[in-house]
Length: 207
Image (cartoon, rainbow, N blue to C red; front, side):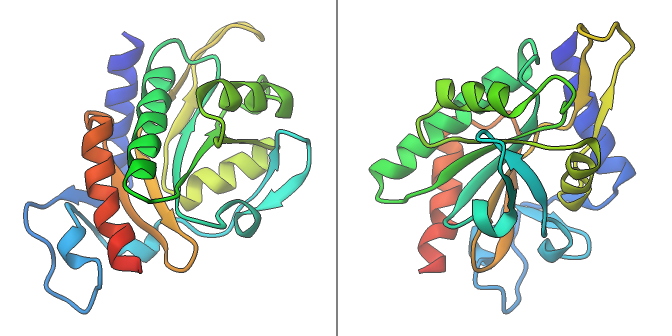
């Protein structure tokens, strides 16, 4: 049921933020990544991503410039998520390892959309248990909302008591490069090998 809600939430982002649709052919343009793209974004890729200010596992305030110092695979979720987030973040961690085998150094990043429960320590432990290189980030409600809006993600807390509640959220993973910012997103149905293959095209083209 939670998985279905998350999938529906992802679809809602596509409809409500209207900006994303899938294309089988890349754009013919001056875009150096055109041959790598499997998606098309209304308004262009530069409408997704941008500056953010969050808090890392040490409790330090960091910006996107501090975090995205090399190619990064970013996922928005929450540590109390019962099934979708663990599956997606494990999948991303496996993709990172596949990319490493190909000679690509990519950082997995987990951004919590549940700052009330996800303290710096909690997101730090969550990230460390998934991958030694994963960066866990949280922040104030305002900081998290701003980061989510920058990446055009969706999340909504469901009714529940103060400690036990679910959060509906979109489930895309975002490939972000230090020089170019956001370049591509990946749906949750993709396997680690799929993500590694698609991401490697962008990483090769960036060099």
